[in-house]
Image 1 (spheres, helix red, strand yellow):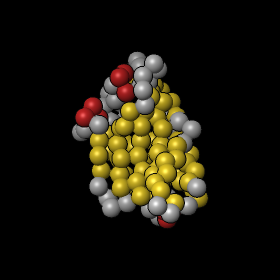
Image 2 (cartoon, one colour):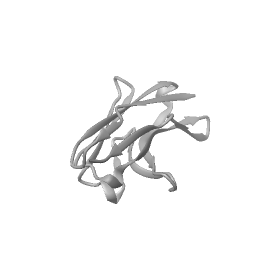
Image 3 (cartoon, rainbow, N blue to C red):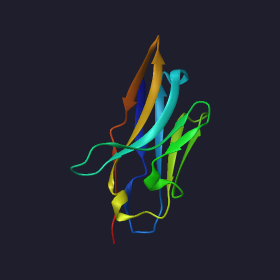
Length: 119
């Protein structure tokens, strides 16, 4: 199993920046991808950014050029640097890890962390 703990959320003004961190523990060596998703009130959970063990990244169109995902394998952590934040970025942000168990790919989620962009 893989356990995930997020940190770094909070309240920020429009145009500001935040950096989210996600610490992974457990079966670290089996992780094939990590990423961030978000869920605003009344909406579905959507992809924000992902990164694979091979180093490729993928971003939602709405955050391209503003958000950057990075991974520190030595610290078993993934980060989301969020710049030029907008009120529409307000959501609960969830860390995700996909790991292999035998022939299966299993998804693990953090508990979520609130990000609020408001003046």
